[in-house]
Length: 244
Length: 244
DNA sequence: GCAAAAGTGTTGCTTATACACCCATGT
DNA sequence: ACATGGGTGTATAAGCAACACTTTTGC
Image (cartoon, rainbow over all chains, first blue to last red):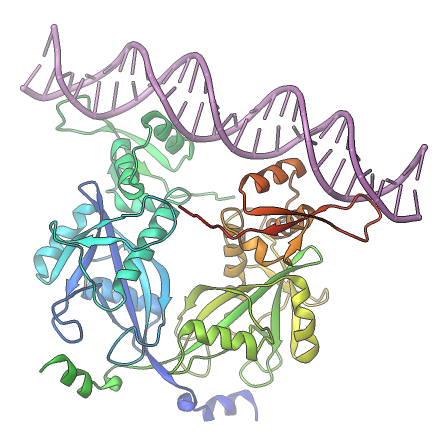
């Protein structure tokens, strides 16, 4: 049998087929704290509980395409920095049937949420707190408006914890922080993002030098307005170019 | 309708269901070079081509369980350090039907391959070469016995490239290197692993100090035998304990 | 004694931290 | 003028690479 004939006669049902979803961890830094976008479930299972926005992956779309579709349809965002996080595949993670979830995490500047929150009333922003002072893993706490820590639907609490860990881990050696800021920003705003995610105070001059030496930044020559003190210079993120 | 009734009536076919596989990147360092275990395909598609060992995920097993099953059945290994790498979900990555693949990468000491290679004649070890001298991504070259670079089946070339990049990235800040060495090893052997993966020469004394300062290592007091020169001390990996 | 590799010490450079100080703006 | 945060310089400490050197074994 040649390959064409083989493919012609291939039976896709010879092996089990599973339901596959993508779930989105849409993160930002808001008022000095990391935050994640949640949606209130309107159906069973976990009706009324808070969950990550997600959706089933269709036959005709890649995983990345599905993630972008969910970003638009369920989270009300036009676009964002999106990156695959991890795939969750425990047998009983969903009470309905066997469902595998590919988690994507997305980063957005704080101001990008306003429109979506207004348009879609089942969405809310939750603050993430990292109770473990050390570096290594452990669950995080998620709160909406200073509530008690929420129990998220499914294994979404684990997913958010992993996303938070990944964000911390990538902060220093990658450019993820810039995805959390508007196009122009001050070095102080950049440092605030770092401090919120790492939950520490950083030294001002050391931070400035490190950032400028990396040459990921370009001074625009423009300055902040409206402050009642010396206005700070606005910087812009420079995508790495030569990369050698 | 309450939740029990909802679950009772849930139709798992309301959404598309996809075929899901796990593919294993079984890596080691052999004769001073990174290596990966490949299997020769005996069926269409890509009959005769080299591919990663893999298998379909069944309804009744988690992704991690499926990865371990493939490790045993397809790669002939009893156990190994295994970690999820990435999930590949392009629409046409498999000519048969829509198949999503969750890639796991596994690390083993060089001597653990001999038995499997003998017992399963369709397996082979391929050497990985990293042609790009810089840090960032790019495809790697895979060779069996000094052949020309192989074209692997499916998108397995991309998968191996990503695995190699991940291995490099994790080397410095994690303990993956110890998974590539036997239980007792010399500091020279450890340095050889680092040099093979990073494809650079490292400074001896700086390397020794760095490793010992990390306190991941314990001197056993025993020494190498059989060398015609000063025998080196044997060390053992100490799993991080307090972790604080 | 010689070859070969283990193992140590010293020096200098690069990078991070602490802290003091000056600068520019609105009130 | 002064309060406030932006921005810069310097001094000290920590970490790392280069290199020379000493030690221990088999032959």
